[in-house]
Length: 294
Image (cartoon, rainbow, N blue to C red; front, side, top):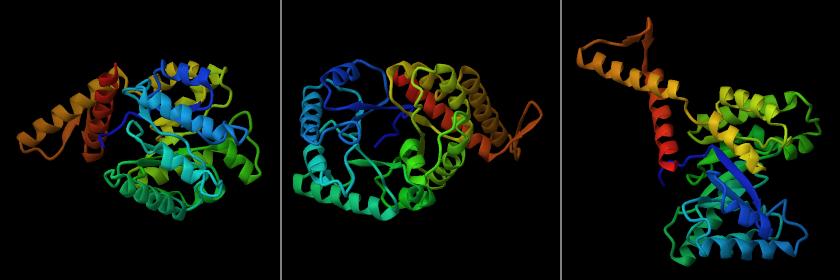
């Protein structure tokens, strides 16, 4: 699978006709068609599956990356979710409440069995585990490395704080350490880290402060609850013109230094070593993905 743009991953309660119709018109990079927490009572789970399948098969999400958030292995709903939703137009699944790598290994093998039974190429469906328990934070690297299907992990802060028995304070201090650990654990396993939702959906000033910290911590995107957040989210997780120009200069001078037999290029008095070159390539690749979507 080609690298995906993952600036915004927006939850859409799949049983809601109104919200599904709205989602078909918005600009989120990835749609998380929710079959789990937001779908209540229990009988609405099948309504959500049916509606998700209908929208996908009718092409209403054409050109979008679709990852249904399915129910966990202890819910009694997982097999129905995956069997019914493993269809063309679905890129993979968001797996909730992962605690250790064993949960993801189990889910990988379940997907493999379903792919085999349906005659689908093994490995087609990717996995985005939700890190929303204390156990998951402490086992983040084993979760990332449990399956080659894992392309990203996402932080679910509210479930995490509940599991921890902590408090989500106004300054978000209680979220800082797990955010940092999740970002580092993901990057250590070459997996994309996705930041938690912003629960104050109408407080765009607070969202902007969170985004500034998020990119400093190394996150590549964010879980989104409301379309009004998308403009800011896309702005902060997209390379700026200045970053693109600087990255182009780095690659240009690095190439010239190599052709001239110099060890390391120098820009504005700074040595441009391999880490700078690698970062420049990542920025330009992401900028290319952003431009393709425009």
